[in-house]
Length: 60
Image 1 (cartoon, rainbow, N blue to C red):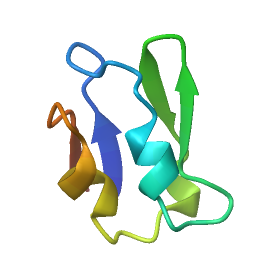
Image 2 (spheres, one colour; image 1 turned 120 degrees about the vertical axis):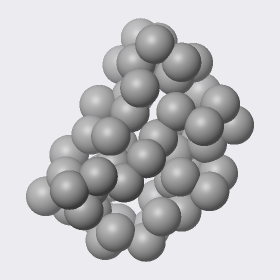
Image 3 (cartoon, rainbow, N blue to C red; image 1 turned 180 degrees about the vertical axis):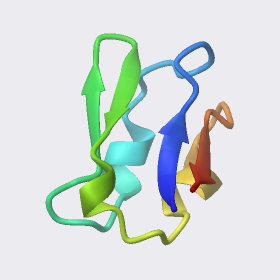
Image 4 (cartoon, helix red, strand yellow; image 1 turned 30 degrees about the horizontal axis):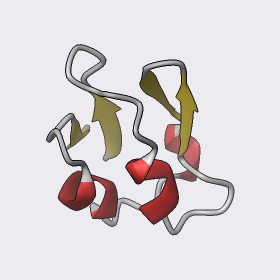
């Protein structure tokens, strides 16, 4: 599974990037939305739990 970001509701706050334990980071925040790099994902769900707008889900 990897994170999927809903660009309609993502506010680009970078919370996902700051809480993600993966190295390199799974998230790259661009303008007003986050871009996902699924190959780096640990499937821990920390981003889902901490997203203030509920814009991230694990899929796959």
